[in-house]
Length: 321
Image (cartoon, rainbow, N blue to C red; front, side, top):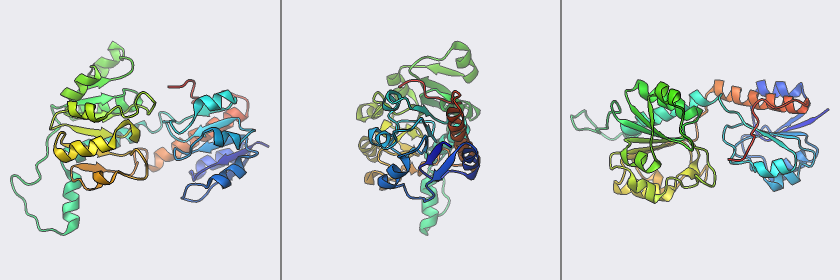
């Protein structure tokens, strides 16, 4: 019977599916599995179900000589060395689609929190400091009629565009490849170069993968191109943004605000960001609904089941980005 190693806690529905396909060992602690324990379990593993906190690298693969499939419970896979897996004949899968709506909802929540200063207001109430309503108290900015610039127009970026359009926002986007005319019409979106998007958008929302090409895509130069009333939203991956540069432009008023769900060195957040009122900080909750996490884990389990049965996976990662 195939041996399946699950390196982190996942929902029971997925574990039940895996148990029908093989002998399952699952790490059940909330803390990250120690490398030594992980490597002991991987020694005779045919399949591994991994989380985005796992580094599936040469050391991981060396510990698992029998490995046939890595099912990553995430849509992003920058934690997986796909080339190394491919060289060893290991199939890699991810979980696209099932987290699209949850992540898009959170992105819009961050847009509203950042533009309307809701995090700042909530902290004021909780602090116990005195306050009273006033015409000029904690004024934010409306998003109706403003431009949303989306960087990365995959499934999540498109879902954000649809939501933003319902708020009356104008949609511009930048992507590796331009969408077809029919899709652009359906979304009401216009393709623009990245520099133009940064310079003309009231809100910039990041939905691109983290690769060598997008590492620090939003750096000091990019941030300087944005307007003083602009807001940056990141629900993609932390290293797409240079956090040191972001903290500086938020502190000196180069841009107005930011809303972040992901960070360069999770779970650490750059200490200068923690001191700023004009940044909303959320602990990587993009897919954090019961329904979404269940669906992600079940999809990962289905990928394992298919590969172990000698069939193609449901959602393979076919090439390097």
